[in-house]
Image (cartoon, rainbow, N blue to C red; front, side, top):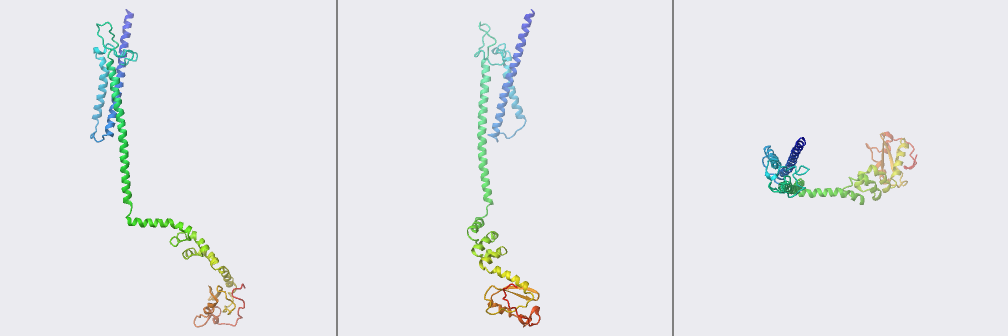
Amino acid sequence: MVSSLSLLFDSVLATISHTFTGFLSTLSSEASVFTLTTITLDRYFSIVHPLTLKERNLRIPVGVMSITWTLAALLALLPLLGIQYYGDNFYGSNGMCLPLHIHDPYAKVNCSECNNYDPYTKAWEHSAIIFIGFNLVAFMFIAYAYGRMILAIRESQMSLRSTQEKQDRILVKSSQPHPLHSGYQDLQATASVTGVTANVTVSATGVTANVTASVTGVTANVTVSATGVTANVTVSATGVTANVTVSATGVTANVTVVKMVFHMSRWPVSPPRTGTDSNPSNSYVMIYRGRFQTAQMSTRTTSTWLQKTRGGQSLEHRGIYGAAHTNHPPCTCPPTCDI
């Protein structure tokens, strides 16, 4: 008696546990499939057909999810409604508590009057429709929807890229000046770029000599004897070299002038002696009212320059600092000597 009760209790408990476990597994499985399908459908319409859903509110997703969970629960509850088609223990037909008749496929409903009646192997069509039919259709739709979304995204990217390129072209065209002015600017840019090359290859053309005068001035003065434009810009840097190259006696004359100014400051200046000096680059020092004046001149113009008077009296008769002429012995040395 006790053993029979225990066996009955065990069988009832096993049936309940198998039934509840099978129900939960079917509900969770189909609810997941339906939820994924619903999410994919929403993404599909949002990407491929973004203008179809004009108004979005919370009622639509709540209603859709309620329908999906209701449908999943209905599919899981059908074997528990006492329908003869599902037998006495639909979910307990196998050890996994799943409505998958792996151990006895193609199980058929048999009547109780038949000798081959088996209450545990029934309703395989239900399992096939749920786990093969619904899931396969959902998988095919999800695959198609995501493939179509990928194509739509690529097409939109290409169209957006072409639109951006068109906008960039329009902006570039609008930012460009008038063709008459653009040609002038191109000429200016070309001139400034090719000017440096011209200075390096040629000897400082007139247009760009001012820009590269400090760099090309020395070379131009040494090799070409200081062209006019470059010489004017780099006189302070190339003056000595230009004098040496063009007139080799320029440095010597300048040094002689300085020494003569120092030693002859106390001597009156006498006119040059005719025929004693024929160097056209000699330097003479004139002492006039306490200021030293240097000048470079030739012997042909020296006598004329000395005879220019101030107030009708020549420098020769005025003497030092404008005083009266005294009988000092004339300087017997040549003007270019070092006293």
